[in-house]
Image 1: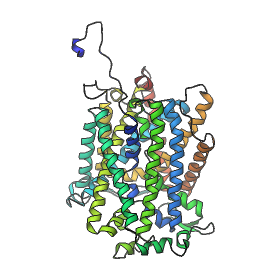
Image 2 (image 1 turned 180 degrees about the horizontal axis):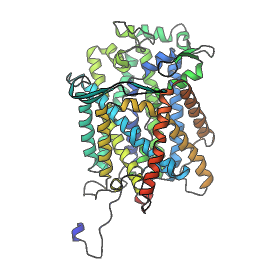
Image 3 (image 1 turned 180 degrees about the vertical axis):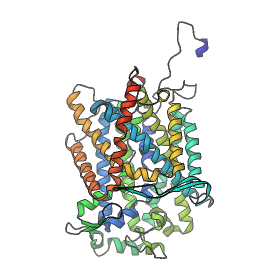
Image 4 (image 1 turned 90 degrees about the horizontal axis):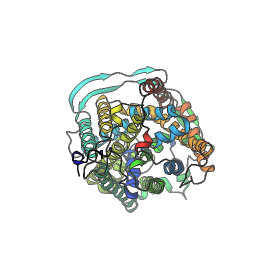
Amino acid sequence: MTPSNLPQNQPAAAPHFVRGMGLFSATAIVMGSMIGSGIFIVSADMSRTEGSPALLIAAWLVTALMTLIGALSYGELAAMMPKAGGQYVYLRESLGPLCGFLYGWTLFLVIQTGTIAAVGVAFGKFLGVFFPSVSAGHWLWYIAHVPAIPIGPMVLGNMDIGLNTANLAAIVIITLLTLLNTFGVKLGASVQNVFTSAKVLALAAVVLVGFIAKNTAAIAANFGAGWHNFWAGASWHTTHAVQVGVGGPTAFVGLLTVVAVVQVGSLFSADAWNNVTFTAGEIENPRRNLPLSLALGTGVVLLLYIFCNFVYLSVLPMAGSPIASTIAGRGIQFATQDRVATAVMESAFGAIGARLMAAAILISTFGCVNGMLLAGARVYYAMSRDGLFFSSVGKLSRPSSHSGGGVPVNSLWVQWAWTCLLCLSGSYGQLLDYVIFAVLVFYILTIVGLFVLRRTQPDAPRPYRAFGYPVLPALYILSAAWICVVLLRYKSQYTWPGLVLVLLGIPVYLLWNRMGAGSTTAAEDAS
């Protein structure tokens, strides 16, 4: 019976979320959001800073440990509050609405939308391997160049504004996937399932190929002399050169500090695992499936990441020269445009290997964009239901016979508009650099919230309790705090700008709070 045919005394049911995603789909969101383009690239910059195969692996092991502890800790919060908005809701309930808003504000302004823009443009750049006309240098509409403007520790500007074929490709896939997600979570989840499966298989293939196509010269350089070469430079007494800020002096730091410095690359190549919590209102049996999907998804991806780095070391020497004419001569440190995985495949299969790797990254970035688009819209929806975002964003479309439930269509399109603007502005990469520190701070605050809720809501249902509590969550807080201190000291360009972006949300919160003071519908009621 359609709404128009309902008896007058039987009103049509209000649009609502339907729990239509099972464990596989939830795990696919975790894995699909984590695997973008970072794992294929960041090891080059990390190796230039560390200069040691052992420290490269150590940095990824630290990332794996922290991410797993974080995921297992979030599992308790997810099972306790399986509501649309996820981490925003956890922060709101444990540390107050201002803290929740600042997270949602930063997520919308940069974290989610900036990552989508960056991954989308990466899709366009790798599409250029097959279609050379797709390039960041092929301008269709060049507006202006914004010069670099140093402001204290920050450097603003230094970006080109306009439409080139690379960001046009990004805008096209962002538009296509946004449109697909407006038809219902089942369709969005199906797309995610297919592309996550494909990208995991592609990453596993890289691992397999790397172990088959081992390079004896690279193995000797990285593991030879009875593993002496592997441990070279990893002594507690060895110092490593780190540039302080942008254009600052060179500082010589110890092992723990240099591993913390390079976490900028590895931690955030493994980021976005928390996206599945945003979709909690649409996951079947969330009190079981949310914690399980977090554990399974992060565990599999991180294991593949560590294997990938062993593959890099098995095929390419770590040390190299930026002017070398061969792949092996450039090594991991100076792989062309930092594309380490591409260099590995090219070393194994020649030019066709580079094309295979480009195809794998296209699949990876496409799936990553879809997962982040699907998840992010649920946070802005939850904020709107609390009166802290545009009121229209807090509305769901009426479910159709095939959609499986209401969809936050307006939230999807608002997210689309801002993301496309970031693509055109060329600012997404710079903004992401600025919020790396802020993202880590919000992870710390959320796990602090776990301790707070154990004290303030001791009798709340907890179908799953954080593994290793309180030791492991406390270890996460201490480790992440140490990384934050190191970044404040040595990478100020990644810290103070991010804090400024977060703090700008305070007057915005006061404005939204005043405008939404009459809101009577809470986010949790809608899920």
